[in-house]
Length: 277
Image (cartoon, rainbow, N blue to C red; front, side, top):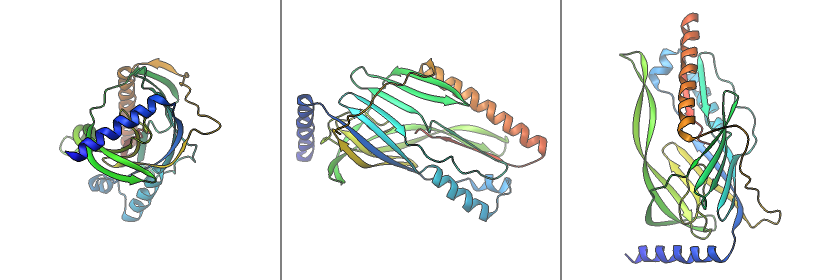
């Protein structure tokens, strides 16, 4: 109980500080994602152990990315740093990665967000209201760099695609996972990387199933200032409209891949990943 009271007092004091001064800064994040290929898929596709190890190494490198979060007290802009094109993989393997190079603008005062993204070369501008984050504030603390961070958790449902051998097709499967983040009230803004926001302090670490995001550098109040300009390029759609377009395109790509695979008599499989940024 004493620890919880201390936590609440720390948050209140930090928020009071935020009201008294304008915060801005640039945070750098490193991402990593654990990845594996189902053994049955590998066998059916004729992938030997050597190729499997090569593919794992390539995919691991694909998901080790660097992002920057420019933020003020009420606005933030999250984007990936420019990097080399992802490595090629073997024949019969199709990799679909969505959302990796998006621009995500968030305004906590207006409670809105704008996301610039694309599907197969067509640009979209998602504009919608922020969703309330049902975080559970925990008592546990730890240090990340020079900052004391508090733990927060929530559960989320993730949609996976599982291959049904009996039906010879992929099926959607829901999986409930526990999401854990670490935030610091020392930087009293409600921002964070990607879709992790709404806490009484900047989010510095995320553990979301197989995805890990860690803040590696923070520059507060830089002399050159920060840019949090809202993206403007692309066809304007709501989140629901975009989700429907994305699902339609995903099915079209899957059907095209299966058709090509069948016409050539080849084996193969598709790796679908939500880059999520």
